[in-house]
Image 1 (cartoon, rainbow, N blue to C red):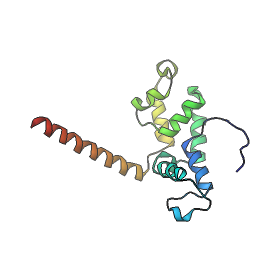
Image 2: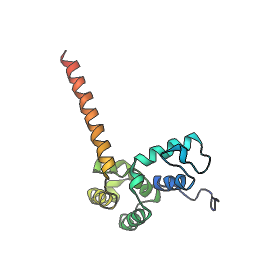
Image 3: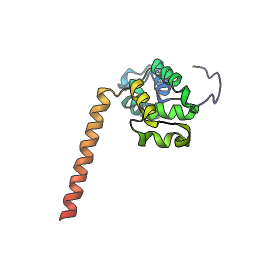
Image 4: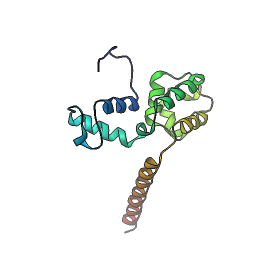
Length: 146
């Protein structure tokens, strides 16, 4: 692969994942087509578990087109695509002066959820994290009562 324009701008996690796939990265390190650094495997593994794994170029382009009325910066759009906020509290720190620039932040969150729906694997990992958090909280309460 040849770099055409240096520092052309920020990349989405999907674009990084797609690049690593094109270099031969896979969940099974024995199926590697090209020599990859251990750090590239770690990046691939982390991105393959996140929101980027369920995104497509078409969904990203659709989201960028639908964001035009909000007049978001390129960096804000990339952050929203990478993080995929599911509530107003999660989108609030991603957009500078959101109160002044976006009339209804919940509408923007709904757009994110519509274009980038949560897949089954992420739901299962989210439920697992929630159950771990609940068990830690129960232990803290029990320790406080003792």
